[in-house]
Length: 262
Image 1 (cartoon, rainbow, N blue to C red):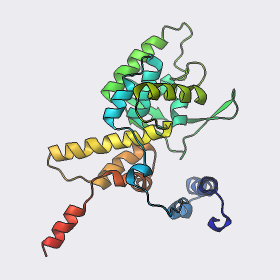
Image 2 (image 1 turned 180 degrees about the vertical axis):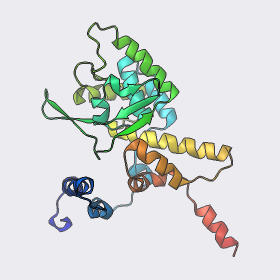
Image 3 (image 1 turned 45 degrees about the vertical axis):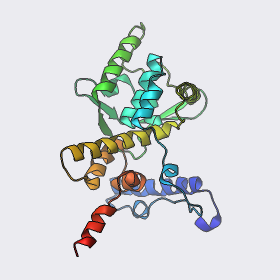
Image 4 (image 1 turned 90 degrees about the horizontal axis):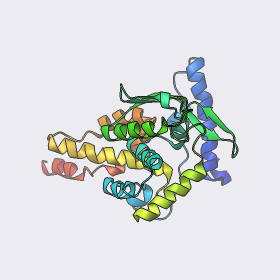
C-alpha cells in the first residue's frame, strides 16, 4: 500500500477499517489477538530534520492561564477548560449530555462520540475504540461546571438530556473554530487545534507527575504513568508511549552513570 503513493491519512482510514474487523472478531468470535493492531498504523516517512517542538504542539500551563483569562463568556470559558482538564476528543465533548456528568462521584462517563453528516444532521456512535471510560473531575473544572450548569438551568426547557455544550443542539464545529480563533487572537498565545488541547492535557500531567515525583524523592516511572493515562485518554499504552514519550526528560544521565560505574 505504501508503494501506491497514497496519503498517510487515507492509508490509516484503511488501517482503521481492517483493525475494526479484527476487533469485532475478538469481541464476538474468540480471536485472541489483533494482528493489525500489533503491526501498528502507517507512519509518515520524513526526510527533513524536525525538532521535538515541531512533532507535538501543546499549551503550557502558563500559556493556558494567559489564554483562558481572556475568555469572558461562561459557555466558552467552561468549554476550553473542559478540553484542557479532561483531554477528551472533540466528538466526545460534542456528544456529552448533562446526565453523563456525576458531580457526586466527580466523574464524567465517556461512552459515545458525535460525527457530523451534514450541516444540520449528526450521528451519535460509540467511542473511537468502542471502549467506555470514566474520567475524574478535578476541583477547578468541577467548580466551573457547577457554575455553568446553574446558568443553563435558568432556561425553562432545560433538560439533563441536553448537550453540555450546545443545549438542545450540539455545538457546531464552525462556531467552535471561530470562537477559538477569536480568543487566541485576544490572548496573543500561539493558536493550536482543538485536538492539540488533548496533547496539552497530557503534557500538563507529565509535568505535574515529574514535579511531584521529585518532591517525594521518587523515581519517574514512565511505564506506570502511561498505564494510568491510557484509560483516561482512551488509548493503548503503546500509542501513549509513541506519542508522548519524548516529553519526558532524557535518561541519558542514568545511562552514563552506569557506564561510569564500570
